[in-house]
Length: 506
Image 1 (cartoon, rainbow, N blue to C red):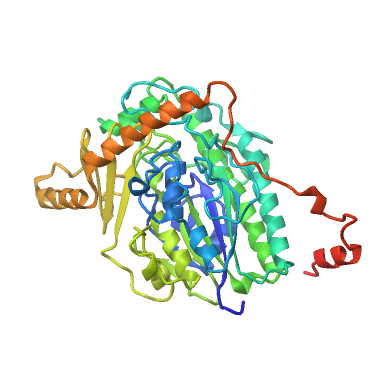
Image 2: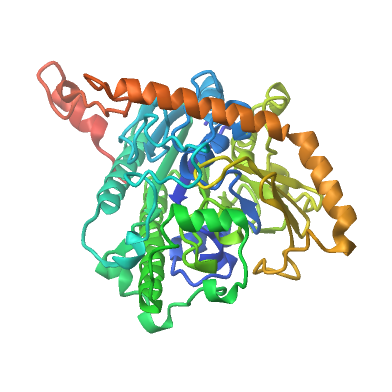
């Protein structure tokens, strides 16, 4: 490109935990991700700032904490007046497109993307609003249960597979269109798959990559824990783990399917890379790979996400641009909040104009050889179902601090205690450290104000949702449109121009 702006492809997986991927020491068979890691910069400790699908993505797109923008949970509106990286990049001359899941809630289903090629897999309305005023209640029609575990196995098709097949198809087609377009703008394309998100069912070809008997079981089982923290106890209720008996074989089968679905996503990533290279876009295209959150996958007897334990909150992040940036590994702590400033920085956008709005930091300095930032702080907050008040997380160095007023504090030294079995918040030797984290938390947030805001938002959304379900229902879900009158060959077009313009020699 004449202006030197690179193309950017952001590839997202859903519920893909870094500890299960080979660049982070895990058992998943993912040659395409491994290639990105070998050719790019691997960030060893990256966190979801809110380990739940929609709020994690809202934080990523805006570069702002969820409590700042009112996007608390899977049914909280992502407001149209919140700038996203798609807005900034589009203003800077990029064509922006979204293919796949982003779980936007509200009437705005684009949020700066010029084009969206698929609908979302989950609803865009307020129906999934949590109710902190009823902590023991269950919304059975949308709450998790353990059917994904007890019915895990092999399937040729599923709701999730249908969706990701569609995402992959449209992404490949879009890359081919970009390779033969007359539009000289650089492109930013987000491709977002819903796997390896539950249900844990996988196609035979990916299942067969693994030896079932060799599938690793949880490092820490529920039986290994004499006691559990209050939030984990609530999560057991949210996901019916308190009333569902799960056998070791069911756990192994679910984990087998999860790893197979990591390989399924990797298959599509491999096809994306192949298409980029085949059409001569490789030298001008930066690929960023990440996920919205992880999956406990039976660790500590928990499944899915919704907590700040490592398997739920720690996610992959790789930035791959061979020939533009060096490859390697970075120990700098990072999070989804860093995606927006990084994309802007890669595009040459002056961050000083937006720095007051962004809670994250660009990782471009690490890509260009800067030393790891050992003092980097990662902030997290969980405001969804299973909580009864805001849950805050701070990670600095080897220490992770988690606090909620009703639950108390947790402090883990991840270097000495990677399984997070020893809560040192009550250790007299750590009293000064705990107090410092609490003071820092109180400086970064007003916990009482956040709590009040979340409760008020839940009440408003419940009122609106109940009203909108009476009479004629008007959906906010994105409806992809196709202009068939302008597709392929039509009689208002010149056949010679159509054929020559759609042909690609590569």
